[in-house]
Image 1 (spheres, rainbow, N blue to C red):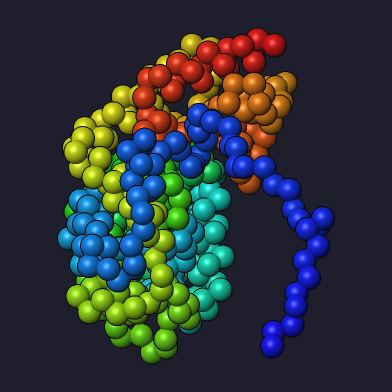
Image 2: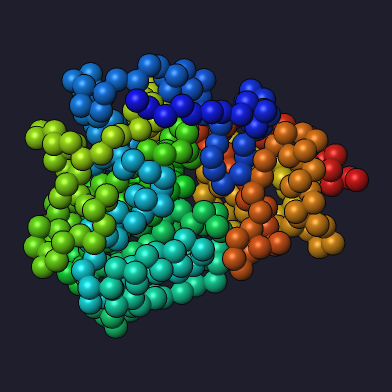
Length: 382
């Protein structure tokens, strides 16, 4: 017989039903998801090997190739946040002793350095002040000096709002026989990207920014050159969960079980990508550029300035200089508590110096700008 279990109901937890405030998310991410994306996420789940779900995985792969402008066969969504997709690029492309050259001009360049070091790479860096970008001449000199196996650059530095030009970098990497790894976390969807034309070998992103979805299903892609390096490894990939030798069998024709995918997050990602395709990728890019230019003008109209030169600013994320004598954290708290608007603070070297304002995906609308500017006028006047 099973022993009798006595439960003291007086100790039962009293938890109220979930109630979360509605915010306008204009920080560095997540952004508000499109209502159709949220509706898709509420669809009843099926099994992760159900034929209907496997078909949805194929659609996600095709749509990701479209938004990245690539034909890479291994283009998938990693079950995890953008940092998991970032680590997947490092884990699969890096072997102990590989020279990995990282361009550091912000917080997420430093994260690449940290990750590559954990996988045994011989990490080298080139640096620029936060908010600046690397020229082709600077990159050529660095490649000549370090002769890396991988050059890692952040296309859209989320900490600074700067866009690193990539035209010609892939050609340089082929000249020096190295792979080009690119962070597109804050650029995919909202910023023109041409992975194949630019010669990018590894790229990763996230779902909660330019793609307009909840976080947790993160794009990842490898070129044939990167796949060749993976297949010639002398050691197993040091991260089982992110090993593309295994994941490719789940996402490919073999359909070998690897893990239980976050079904509903993939529903959302598929719907967000479908909406981009429906709007048209060029139109989607143009909408982000048009609305951020409106934001810049309105910020200047109330006396604020931007941290990054106009030529290199991101259309998805703007770093706004906090005026002298203004408590940036207090202003951000007031926007959140009194106006239900979230903006981000600065990271690292820019902590306390800038606000980070995102206009991404569904939130890239004139109404978002108008709502923020009206609130800023009032809190700054106080």
